[in-house]
Amino acid sequence: MLDASSAGGSAAPSEPLLTDARLGKKPADRLQRHYLQATLKREENKFDQIIAVDQAHAVMLTEQGIIPRATGTALLVQLSKLRREDVGIDVMRGSMLLQIEGHLASKTGNEAAGALSTGRSRIDQGATFRRLYERQAIIAVLTELIDLEAAVIAQAANHIDTIMPGYTHLQPSQPWVFGHYLLGVAERLDIDLVRLERAYAAVNLCPLGTVGGSGSTWPLDRHRVASLLGFDGIVENARLGRDIQYTGDIAAAASMLMATLNDLATDLQLWSMQEFGFVELDAGYCGTSSIFPQKKNPVALEGVRSAAAGAVQWVGNVLAVSRGVGSGDLALRGAAFLDTALQSTAQMCDLMTGVMETLIVHKDRMAERAGEGGTTASNLADTLVRELGLSYRAAHHAVGRFVRVCLERNLPLTGVRASEFHEMAGLADQPRLSDEQLAVALDPAGFVRRCRTPGGVAPEEVARLHAAAVERLGESRARLEARIAALNSAERKRAAAIAAILNAPEAATR
Image 1 (cartoon, helix red, strand yellow):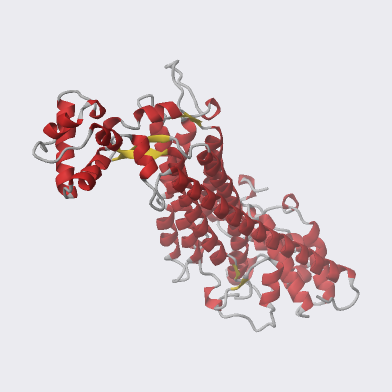
Image 2: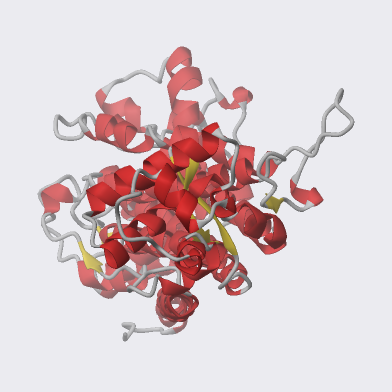
């Protein structure tokens, strides 16, 4: 629709340009090429939302008797059949509002086309169609996020009791359970989802009718327009119609979601190394090397991590852009990068869904490594506290010494008898653990079974966490379906209102 040849073109001779009256001069070629074209391209991508706003506004103007029924009918006839490819873009006309107005003028005449701008400005019109677009983009992210959460929860169900080593500082810490880890990811995704829902609520308010910030002298029915467009309500204070502070909520929610994806992708990539060998990506989500024939590179995870890197700037960018709004620098208000940010977030959720649905988990390798590196050392310290009455700090010191001596002698912790342990730990003068007590304390599976505190890794707790995750997922999906149903209902309501005006010879009824 829009290309370089559009710059420097001219509108039809009979059609006055917006710039004619006040400026008396057409936009400079450089302004057209370097600024106006880019702005138009971004708006053109929101064509469907712009038409929806025009339709709702035309319906309201007609129902309120602000414009003649014949004018409203003529406008709605043309708007109902208007498609993106029908509008020939002329950069000199200005924004998409004026591009569409120019097209309507060619069909209905300048008088009728110009009536569509009664009771609105590009300020509130632009703010409204951008909110519609951002709302739909959030719906797309929520859809992909819920699918990802479902894939993570399904994978967790297969690993309720899959023991693995846990890590802090990339060093072995305590035995973990892979299903428990995944359910932690699912819970973070649910928190991210709630953030996005809050951002959706902030977006889903209608600014149309705030006009230039003072409201209007026309008897506009702002609530009717909001209803026809599927908004939850209106922006109450007219001065806030142009406000973009809500985009900070969107950027923050999307950025935090990308942080969750980054953490998951980073862990999986680390654990897919041969040195770990815990997981493996399906070949369909991997690449290979042009020189190393043996390579199976987890490029899907690298793609997610790369996309997440840019997300750290999203909130800062929104805050920087919004600084201009208060001073009236409205050219900054679009936060254009947000469109691609939301698209990237949805795409990365979808990519990670594929990774999780096809992930290969090497349970035996995880179990083999679960007790290595002293992962049950803290449990041994707890045992000394329980059985020998030591303070935890004294027990911690004794076990730390025991671990060091084992490493110096190249002995596995589990290869030592209780009598040797007491000597190595500097506890020769203390009451002794039995060999059985020592073995139980150093057993990863036994440690896992006994971690029954709420949220722990015991199988019954992991099963409870899984059931809770499934329930939360169902509730989230129901809320998403309700939002989509509300938008579809508004679309039907708008279509019915248009039909009522087009088909009724007299005043339309609601």
